[in-house]
Length: 349
Image (tube, rainbow, N blue to C red; front, side):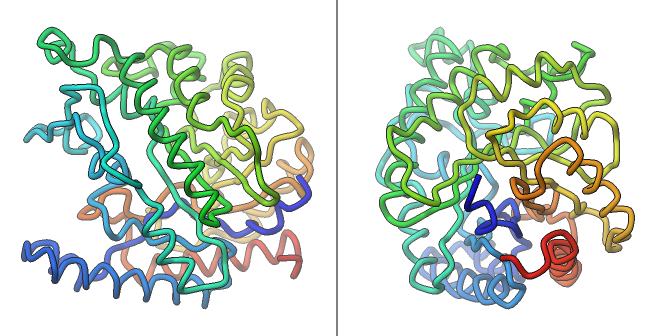
């Protein structure tokens, strides 16, 4: 797509929280926490500008984890003391959700006031939230009757938020559903047994969230369907993923050099952009440039390089208290993405 170059150097949105912000959250003073969040976001924007990033986010600093944009601002959910298989605090949907106001639009306005670079916003996908928060016991006591019903209610809220974000000048929006890639595996056992939505229902729910009657010039809605490719990809199921969810941009893992990663790209329709996660946030050492460029060359044989971007393969701290690396290693990785982008496209961004 013609304006992909606007977003060549991407990242998922979450950044390592500074020590001052972590301390303020632990102290429990709401006013002090808000002030710390404002200062941390301001510094994060300066960092991203200085690294020549073509996207700017708030680092997820005002949120506990990547789901917080919804769970912190929507009624109907109860936080538990349990942990999911991936270590995230478990939340349960006890009623159909209702938004208590904008989810991220206010923070996007803060970003817009700090830089001329159009802000990027990341949201959890409604299918992911429905799959991980639906509880049959709650359904029996008046909660959502099914995960599909819960997902559709969440999709309505998130779709309305996307429209609001676009109206306020956000041009790149990413939905995160870490469960989708498992459904493209040739091995059915790769699908988490705890997922409460079928593949077809998950696709239908996420498709509802990304629909827009009109897309202003330069707007891209992306989907990250997972942070790791399966061992082997079922081509038909991967094609079904891309066909069912009308996203403009697919943010795909591409840092392992596996055949499955390339297969996911091969299945992508010609009219969709790809953002390749060529850098591993959890590995402190910078990736070898020749190795990465060989992978990019392989990608360019199946997808026009002009319709691609690059990024780390996932967020640096999708959970606030579980960063994948240090702030300094994070900076080195983001610099590395910028350097790799210049190897790919010269100075065309």
